[in-house]
Length: 151
Image 1 (cartoon, helix red, strand yellow):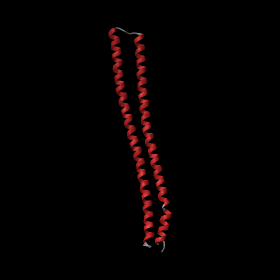
Image 2 (image 1 turned 45 degrees about the vertical axis):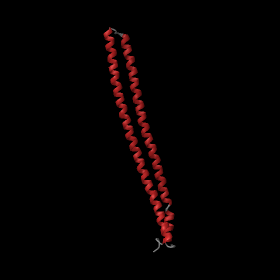
Image 3 (image 1 turned 90 degrees about the vertical axis):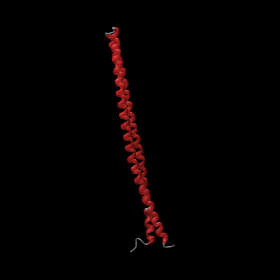
Image 4 (image 1 turned 90 degrees about the horizontal axis):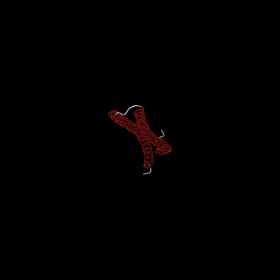
């Protein structure tokens, strides 16, 4: 058993280093995955916002057309209806602008969350690499005890 102990220690140290390096690799993959998922989610949010804006604008155009038609049907015209329609258009423009801003902010928040998760995973990967290097003295000592480094 005496001669097997250094070999077991060396193999154990190499296995520990290998496990740490594999962990670093998996954490690096997780970082890439986090960014890809966040990017897809942000693109989806932007697409949803664009569709909501399109629908709201279509509804606003219908409402504006109805207001003009009603005014014409009852014979209302002139400056008062023009002022009303301009005010209504201003409210509609503000609504669409707000939707676009919040949609963009939501998409950016998703990207930021993905970047944060990726940074955490990369930090873990670097930590695992450091842990792998911490096995080097043990591998060297166990290898020396096993006679691997002598000729």
